[in-house]
Image (cartoon, rainbow, N blue to C red; front, side, top):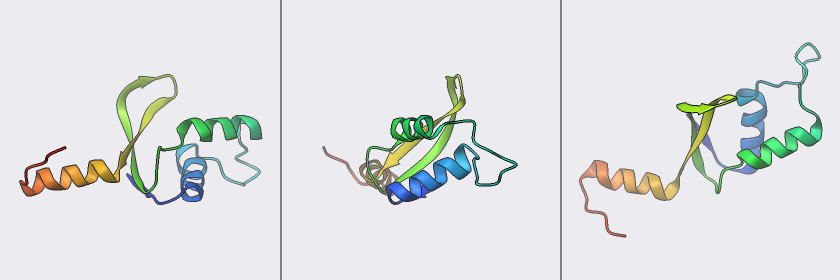
Length: 88
């Protein structure tokens, strides 16, 4: 699980930790710049800040699916954990 606070932190995390691409010549990217940009846009969360984690139960061709948890959902979870009533 990772806290993502803005787009630049998301891009850094996504490229380095999720795709495991770094600037080392011995570990080049298999993606062109255009492909990488497209993948980043498709994977971008709806808003920041958010938490991201891998859902290994989702059967996708590239393995684990990214799941985002947003502030509104966290507030709801907090209220439920505290035993407070939640109204929409």
